[in-house]
Structure formats: C-alpha cells, structure tokens
Image 1 (tube, rainbow, N blue to C red):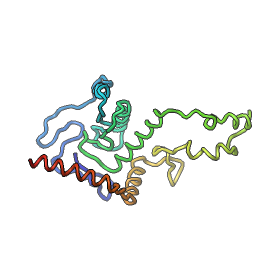
Image 2: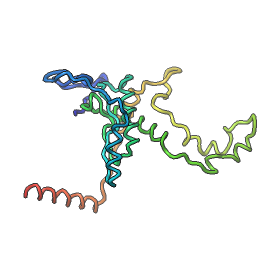
Image 3: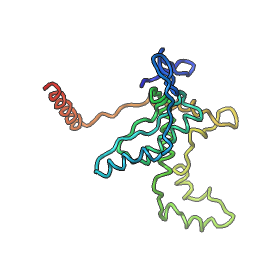
Image 4: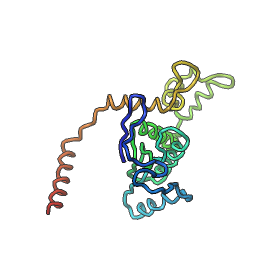
Amino acid sequence: MRHGRRRADGSIGRRAGTRDGRTLSGVGAVFRPISWPIETHAPLTPHELIHAFGLPAFGGAGGTDCPRADGWQAGVEEALGVCTGLFTKAEMSAGIGLRATCQLSTPESLVLDSEIYRSFADLLRDENVSDESLALDTIDQVGPGGHFLAARHTREHLRDSVRLGMCHLPAHDGPAYRDPLEVARERADEILGEYEPRRLPPDLRAELAGIVAALDADVQG
C-alpha cells in the first residue's frame, strides 16, 4: 500500500513501476482478474464463528479495486465493503480510504468513504421513539392545512434532522451541486490544517510503554 501525493492540478502522483489497480498488470506483474465472490454472505461467516467463541473480530470495511476515487466502480465497491463491514459487527475494521486494490490511500478517499460509512450507520441505527420524537402534540396544534415551520419542535430539531451530504452541496455559481471529489479534497485539507492529536493520559502512556518494553525484552531474549 502507498499514499499518493497530490499534484498542483489535483491529480495523484504514482511511483514508476507500480501495478494497475484493476488488473495488477505492470512491471513484474502477472494478469490476474480480481472480483468479489458471488456469495456476499461469505465474509460474515468467520466473524460469526469468532463471536461465537466470545472473541473480538477484525474485519475489512471499504476499499475498491478502482484506482480513482470517483466513478461508478469505486462507489459500488466502497459501499458494498462498508456495508459488509457494518453487518459483520467486527470490533475493529480497516479498509476505509483504500483504492487501487488496497494499494493506495489518499485524504479525499478517507473523507468520501467516511461519508458512505456515516450514511449506512444512520440507516442501521435504532430509531428513537419517544413523545419528543413523535411530536404528536405539535401535529395536533398544526392541524390539517397548516405547516410546521413556525413550530417550536421544528426550530429545536431541524438542524439535527437534516444533513446535507457531500453529493448535495449547492454550487456557488448556479443551480447545481458541487463535485463531491472537490468537496472531499477541501474537507481533507481543512482537517489536515486544523487537526491536533489528543495526548493520551499519563497512566495510559505508562501502561503502553510497559507493554512495549515487555515485548522488546521477550524478542531480545
């Protein structure tokens, strides 16, 4: 796997001699077509067995054979991978942001895959059913022919109920939507420019240092 370096024009630089993401053809490579198994439940079986023994599972989520972040193939394979990862209920997962047969990872791919993951997570979450969420009293107050824009319940919950996805952000210069890849690149640049890693608590740092020291001692004999 490698991390692509973005050029000034927004394209991703690739090292000479690397393989093609879809066919693995290239210098020193042998043509081997790659695809998903027909039985899409197959990835779920190992995780069910692992959980049956009461053990945590590690699974894949996301990833595409497509060398590009946009396009039909990338979208389908990323969505299938993320959805499968959620259904496995694995305690740990990896694969989000990977493309070119899991050989390349870029910041914009991480942002795009995160959007897919969040959409599926919202779809699979338990629905909150309560007096506040049903708002039957507000429905009675508005009545037939009325509207909810002026209702207190609408003002309090509208921002939490509506989220503009990356595919539905209005363009600045006309009645159209922005290119999701362009939005993802901007968001990635914002994250890289603003992110400050959280420091681990002192007790946890000391515990991790002890684990590393014990492993070093075991390796060195």
